[in-house]
Length: 233
Image (cartoon, rainbow, N blue to C red; front, side, top):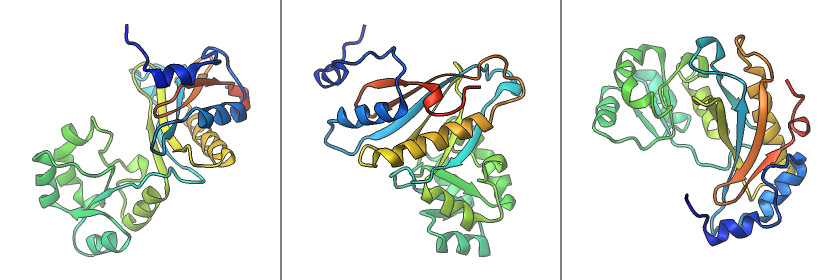
């Protein structure tokens, strides 16, 4: 059994990880116990009543957080001609076509989000086995395959978060930093949870949102009362 380090043991002192507490209290406690020497990320984890092995129970989407994520997002764009110029003007970190494909095939992936204009999908499609497992494959449903590359870049830079449920019905995402105010974190958490609820698939049966927990990068995880975040479904 893995042993917790001294810092994490201290962070858990006086806590009951199994008790569901109010969101405001949980956010305050997470911030108080974030003792790392860097600005830790605050993450939300949700246990959903779905089995993503079935297509009608897949939960996937994107949400723009009202206060951003606090993270600098590097964006790569597959585009040519005027669209490439548009992407550069909008602040894309990497812009290319076949040359960018070759870099990725060679193992160089130094970006957090990948966007493509529709005409480039013939090139991007060859990278499915590389970008897919990393959650970086451009997808029209997520707004990352679009003729409006400038808008997609700005949304990604402004704090747009993609989410996708994992095999065990768990979905998670970073929603800010411990340096954010309590209100900013609560706004972001509620926006994230609301997006998950709106993405409820047709095949979901019974209780959809079973558990919600929040944590910081190096801190403890705290279970949050679902009713303090959103209306239970």
